[in-house]
Length: 310
Image 1 (cartoon, one colour):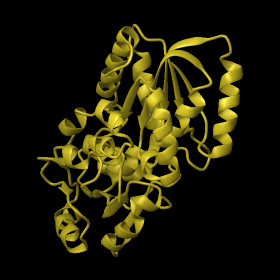
Image 2: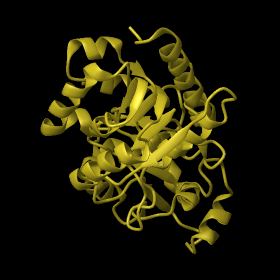
Image 3: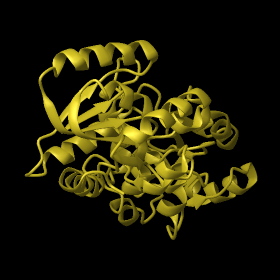
Image 4: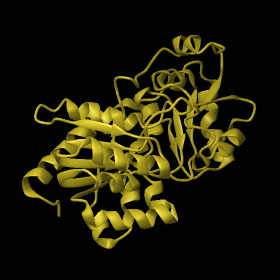
């Protein structure tokens, strides 16, 4: 099996694509699967270069399955010979007007179409593609994201042990994540962000915060919410992507349209507490990287043995 991703990490964005690599690691642990990964950075030039390199690198090789992450990546994957093709859609590949059209054109060539959430499935172009799409997100790494003593996390980040702190769980430059909303909500409370943060340090930021803010305009999935839940850290999020499903029934969390007054009221208790925690890990466990990879592996097996998934 060959997994393709156009979310390779870089010095400026070390966090990019980690969730795909987490899934590949779990897939490679399946005893009957041999999995290889090929990554490249986003952008049209990198896509064309990847298509050329893939054709050269795998000339004479035929994989059982070539699985691309992101609609445009599937086009580069067409240069590699295989028995079946698959794609996982993550958001902008169906929301951006031009990219959406390119995604629509490549989907009929895919034996398996996956999306990160049901909300994303509903946005897939083409009725036939929507009908056969499967909700198969990458999932959260429960080994990395776990409760860590808040004082220990703040000490590691050289933060004031008394706080309080809020965490905007994204890169502020990503417009759809709505950093502006987080700034309005935080007011005078120190607001941490994850722009340019090394993946291994992200759990420290999550555990250092009194609460995690995910006020996104849209989400393909919503991994940041699951990372907070896995750490038992309070999280406030808009009802997009998988947020409503992940946060349903979790006391101390909020899933609601962004409203400064409502969200500030929900935050008050968490900001007053010395070590605010919620019972969120059991919800995150439903979406673990291991569990999600296991589901994808089953679909791969079906695709290999029975051809196209109907």
